[in-house]
Image (cartoon, rainbow, N blue to C red; front, top):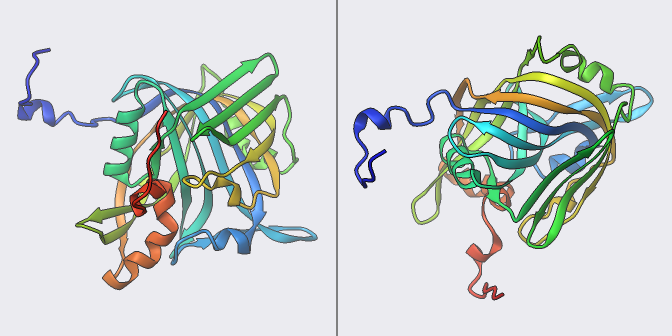
Length: 289
């Protein structure tokens, strides 16, 4: 390939063409948390979906994943993990991501493409680890010297029997017979002009093709830094998840709501920490090592 600052138009048309995150290796799991406390972390007009439980107070659904994206179509391999809450907007259900973290050789391209094209709240972190030996696994994310998400994995069974229904489709997959599953997110794409002057809600259609799935129970620990206060997320119990190999692709990314100008900063109060660090709001912010 010729070295040049100029990129021919015919090459530009290939930008993110058929973008996919292939051969993901790692975990995904569901947890439950108090609906009211989760709602306090979600920007209006999103509503946290309430899961009715017999004899219990309704719970909100928290989604976690940590994977090694071994064959992305647009970058070298990279590690990625995130946490979000299942929400509703005018009858459209989807995942509201509170934050995602990336590390590894392809992390910068994965962050820039996801943030700029879709509005995913991505940051670069120091370390993500996906580790498994036999039926024991450990997956974690570290940023600013703190392990903000840590999952101890026991492969073989779920934490709660209700997970069997939640992961029915994934359980039917095999390497020779992969299973395609639906995946929707409610993302936020903002515009900058000296400040936040526009904000849209984007409906992100991103199915996942599962090649393998092993039921897994997990012990989840969240922690906070000043830049990523994930420890504030009210995670009350783990339902379960799976150790998986999967491909994730993007079908469409459509704007479904544009905030009135006077509501943009009200919503960005909830979204800022998923996208930026506190140094962007302070004059004193130096780090020397």
